[in-house]
Image (cartoon, rainbow over all chains, first blue to last red; front, side, top):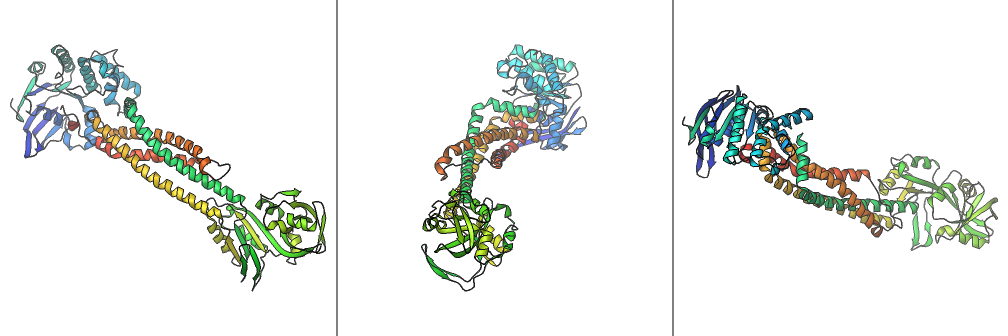
Length: 220
Length: 386
């Protein structure tokens, strides 16, 4: 469960400070699929990075399953991200010189697991997103939809408690977007907590709840 | 899959860049290794030559003498207090700290004798030591070995009209002339050499020694230091180094060594800069990739480990190849630079180890800041899409 209290974030600018979030309160229950929507500049991506333990807020707290996220030190936060979170990025962000399987194994690399177990987990994750048989392909030899699926497999390979997705269909055509969103829905049905940032209203229908942001504030 | 797999994969992704970085480091190292190996090899050659030159330390009794000679013309000497050395000094010489550097100790007793009406300078020697001390001696006949064997210089043999196998009577003692010394162009040509004990008896200097010549290997120990050590155990003797052209040569090589070290410093600095710039460029280029690593839970140490491993591997390959190239260059250049007829390339594992480790260390040092910067990178900043 995610609990956010009075979250603010300001960025320094030449003429002072620009507020990105201005006192956000929200909760995300375990197993919930939440969409965060809003126009460009509304603060939704900033909110996602803070929820994901990647950016310290200016004020406020984020608690995940009882752990105050930003009370952890740098390594503690990294370990928490490795154990608890999975991330799907808008531009896939696959490592170009690693195969699909190696990309999926990336979150497992620092973990003390047997090499065979890592390989098995990554192979299963790829199969789960429908990419069995394409393990040895480099990202450059995969379509946009396939790259997104590899990114999703990488995000879920360590069976995270919460999956964060930032505009996961932003670079995909509508048909592929639907396939990817069906994949998220399938993961959700399997019990996965998902927090997704999107500006596409069609994606909202896959979520249980939509949080709308405007000028750094939750509107509803 | 481990983080080091990422480092290896990344290195293989940019083979050209890593190749040129490795070559740049290897060339720099090769230059330093070549210079150091050349200077060490030339020093070893000089030291070897020095051994062949014979004695380089002369031990004589302390006396208030004033030599009356100039340019090889001797007009005798004014002696106020002539003394001799006791045989015990031979044992004391062997007690100095650098005794392992002493190659030969050759005691001598000197005295004037008359043989067949001709005045000669008789030198009582330890033939075994003397023949080791003067490897350039060429004998006609057989080496003296027995207590009544004698050796005669070429000029002296000509004056006396004797040949190997003849017998000589000196102060009532009969010696067998086993060999005649082929012309050396030195004072040895006019001398009569007999065993030390016989010489002491003839010159009435029983248990006395006139002078001692010492051949010392100077590797790792300056002759001046050994002179000081011998003087320390022989307070009643005058110990002096025979300084020859070798000293000048050693000075020249010393300058070459200093130049090598200076050049090594400059090359190290250049190497640091090359690795630093390359690794900084690599980190900036891989910002998104590093952002992903950080976002999915890689600690600062994991990311730093990847970058430092890449730099260390480049350093290792550069170290191995640079050392090999450096040795090759030294082997090619040595015959042209060494004054020795048979220059010998000195292979020292310490130089190899130091060279390889220093390149690895330089690579790691230069990559430390870029690696730390990567490790501390904020994932949200790195991944601009978020």
